[in-house]
Length: 241
Ligand SMILES: [Zn+2]
Image (cartoon, rainbow, N blue to C red; front, top):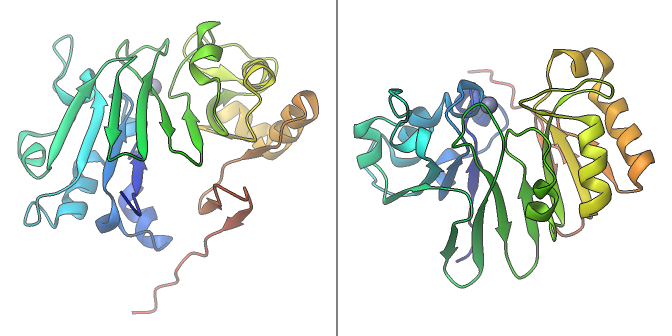
């Protein structure tokens, strides 16, 4: 399986931002939707429409939590029935499942502790690299075992140092996780108001200083070469039409 494009958690603005930064949603092969909170899946149906030419070209795989795919506790599923039909395959998964794409790529779903009890983390393994994504979760010791062996670790770090949350990770949690997992690169993202006020770049520097692991703060347009780990910024396309 060559040139696989994953789209992880298509939250609000996915469609607009993809266009702005020149990312083709038509090139998506696999969409991952970790849970049913708006900031993670608001644009899910719109992204499926873009990927499939509104169903004319049925393709792609959607992998999501039960809450996104079938709905739980009286909540409707996030995906609509018609958008489901636009896809080649859709899988509703629980933590601890493994899916293989060809011989080269394997996806594992990870445990979380979050308000959406079905919320997932993900680990994408290939022969060259392993990428971990915490999903939305608070800290619990098993999280470290779940994320072990990842080369690039993406952490949903909502709160800065000194703040605790029952639902999300803080910079203190990131230090604990990164110190134990020791990825080649850690990327913090999913910033809340308090960490934005303190500037996530400084938080990332502080995490790096405390863990001795290269840590960067995500920003719009960030591109990472997964092998060299070189970071660059995708230029915004300025529309003059
Ligand atoms: Zn959430």
